[in-house]
Length: 132
Image (cartoon, one colour):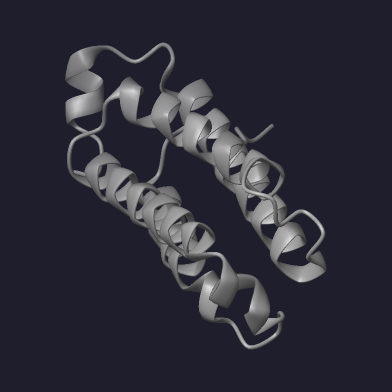
């Protein structure tokens, strides 16, 4: 019987997916699919979204270079904030942007939980060898 340890090891492609997610989040206020009035009237929405995207991108880059557990926990917290931000910042009535941010936030949380689960039992030395 073969060993299906595909999800048991933190791989570098997961970090690249995190960087892609961060770029998608940061660019989302300018996607032409949603109503431009949402972002034109809410500069806080744009600032929040770009900041979250940059944080997700930056954390994924840090995980790629030097893996630490706090990065994964922070990724989960930032993903939860992205899910909650349409309701906290008052754009929950806008269909596409709310759906997009909720979906991307859920993917960020799932990715962070997967990576934290994969790295839970690793020693500090094993985490330093990530990506090599």
